Length: 458
Image (spheres, helix red, strand yellow):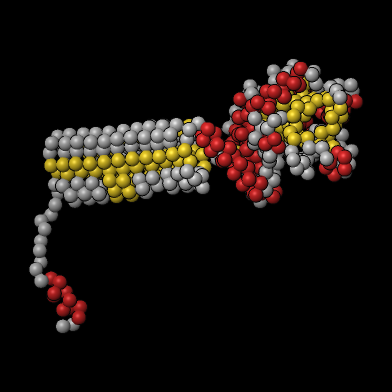
């Protein structure tokens, strides 16, 4: 069985945070998740993560789904992989990919193609490489007619070697049985006193085993983050890469300023995304929608021809032909049925809003089921919480809820009910009825004149 060992023990001191570096996020996902996703997409289901600094945070994030081992002391990359030997020895029949948990742009195609070459050439070890226009700081690949002779680090390279543009990505394929054997032969006889994984190449060659290099067409596999500036660059790169994919699929962007779209998002043809729009998690958006500006959509399902303007929507379903905004908050577990219009300063929570219903402005609808063709007047509040538990309101089809109506849950309005402005509804209202709750209005003539005389002392 082929497997993967992901090195995720880095502290990232220059990040200035008490968190393992692979857990820093790129487009809303930890870098470690990007690496795991690429491995799984390439068919590597047996994965071991080597943790180190704040390893309990790695365990918490992974949730027990993958094998983890601890590198208690930071003694080099070779030492990190040595901690995974018990994992490797469970099945030494296949190959093992060793790669870094903080280089998020490794891709499925590179993993599959490099494995194919690794097996075809019968290599004990295959280094995954890429070519950079500016290779400063990276280990250079020294090629021979039959493979490679080794990797030379920047500080040890001659001028001729420094001119080489092919560099080590930090990812390697090993025959698993060879990897276990080679790890046992590493030593720390170097200036740093560390065990280097790259030394396995020279050891393998000295034993007459094949060592090769696969040069990926995707130079982005090299990209990593050592500080916050690097992380910002990774996010900007990933952000534009995702936007370019949507452009190619027929999505319109008049300006990409402030637009962030995470990887799992699906957007239909002809939809327009306006500036300062953030679309997260597994959101799906239909065709010919208009999203933004100043909008956040997270883990929602949107139909066709939806218009969201200055909206925050979370874990909701919004059907086709709905218009929402500006300044609207759609909270989780809400369903907005087709043709509905929701205007400014409205909050919807855990509610179903029926087809062609209008909630034009200044309303709170929580824990409610609203029917079709209902009009919710300005200032309407569903009073759903009594300090102990939440209760639901039910409003039937074709109701007209007057301005400044309070619905004290649990309460039900039947079909085509009218509530007069200012009414507080405390009990169920039958079909076709009018609910009105007003005190007698009094007019005190001359009040203002008397008030002014008292105030002015006249």
